[in-house]
Image 1 (cartoon, rainbow, N blue to C red):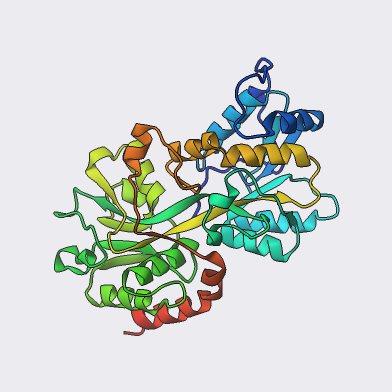
Image 2: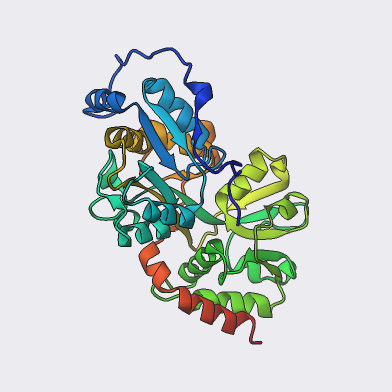
Amino acid sequence: MKRRTLIQFAGLTPLASLSCLPAFAFDGPELYAGEKALYAAAEKEGLVVSFDTGPEWANWKALFREFKKRYPEVELTYNDLGSAATVVALEKSRRRPQADTAYYFAASAVDAVKKDVVAPFQPVNFEKLPPVFREATGKWFTIHTLNVAFLVNKKLVKNVPTSWADLMQPEFKSSVVYLDPRSTGVGQVIVFAAAYANGGSVDNVKPGTDYFGALHAAGNVMRVEGTTPYAKFLKGEIPVWISYENDGLKAKHVDGMGDAMEVVIPKEASVSAPYAISLVKNGPNPNGAKLWLNFIMSEMGQGLFAQGFVRPSVPGIKLAADVAAKMPPAPQLKPLDVIKASERKADVDKLWAQATLAK
């Protein structure tokens, strides 16, 4: 599933359009204790290299802009490689690292720790994260989540489903589309969400695969996709798409669907998939990197993520009223333990195939 607008280049992209901003006199209140001293140290380096932070994904462009306004003497460059490719790049350049920070789906962060290419750092608000959303020493930590939801085209269904049980009803015959859990991360996460909703968990995925088996047997699955059907959803070809919440919010508020569609976190349970970032081991600009990571985890940075339709990882972040209205509290969301989830991939593949394809 291609979730980012790709930058068509091989190297790093400087935020050149921002570099001409006037110097900022850092004389306001600190976002956290020690911010000014860290900025002074980062200013001597003058640069941060941020891997895999494509500007059109998760509102990174707004974080870039506000970081540059606050710290005008620190240049910020980025690339957009993808999670797995980022780990490969870090491993290949371990003797002379080019990156200062690396962003990825948290399962790739776990891989980066195993390959010993990231270093411990505990930013502001680190201790507020659920334990499954951080590596104990700070070698990775979650900065935002993506959450499983029903994206519903109200022009194609009479009643908006609010629960996993609703999707089993005859009125949703040949109406449901989702991604293949054997080949996509989103598909895997969806199975875990269904498991939690039906009495299972990340440790017991069979209730989730059984659910999809029953959904297929009822004839309610239109098809299983191998790549994102976002364009098809926008065209009005899919009644109910089980995907990530941010896909639906973008379709509703940015890409023109408006009130014709609804985004629903199913009421029994759903899961939050963590997206994480790390300090790169022996990166060239360690102070700039820490300044960037603290900014990302500050209330300001977390609020900017929310404006891009992804939920902040830090609990209790106060959001603007219009933003909060688009992402109301959802206590039924379960934080996904990606270490356990990755260990269950073979089980998900096997059980899902047995439940849905062998009948």
